[in-house]
Image 1 (spheres, helix red, strand yellow):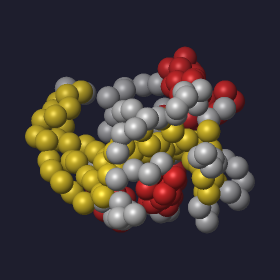
Image 2 (tube, rainbow, N blue to C red; image 1 turned 90 degrees about the horizontal axis):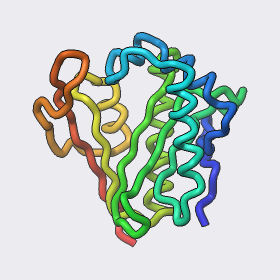
Image 3 (cartoon, rainbow, N blue to C red; image 1 turned 180 degrees about the horizontal axis):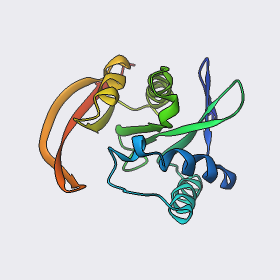
Image 4 (cartoon, rainbow, N blue to C red; image 1 turned 90 degrees about the vertical axis):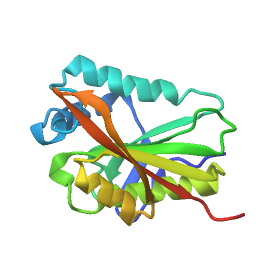
Length: 179
């Protein structure tokens, strides 16, 4: 059985609840956050649907998607989310992703959360490989992945198109320890 919530020295990574949407809306409306996403704005309805999607994923049996609220242990405040997703329950690999409130950038929280997702994926889900991607313009996100131990595997030129331009995407990966 998978042991949730996940815990790090400063963070608690837990399943989302219906009451989490206001904290998500607060950071997803921030222009610093929106700069690198396809969205130009976020409404209450958008974010409620976003959070409800994660709540519905919790009911999967077997569960293949773990999108978790990132909260600070010291005060319980929700500061972002992170997740690990497999295409099927028996897949040997998964993809991770994360986002943090811009006011919390630069404190090492994303790296701490990613390291815990890797531990969870390899030790509890029994994965062999974990991948991630980020738009190349998001230098801080690339740094997080590298600090967590992922290796740059490639660059897809003009992979994404939004906000009137094309975006290159960086692909990262890591293989787990041999059993």
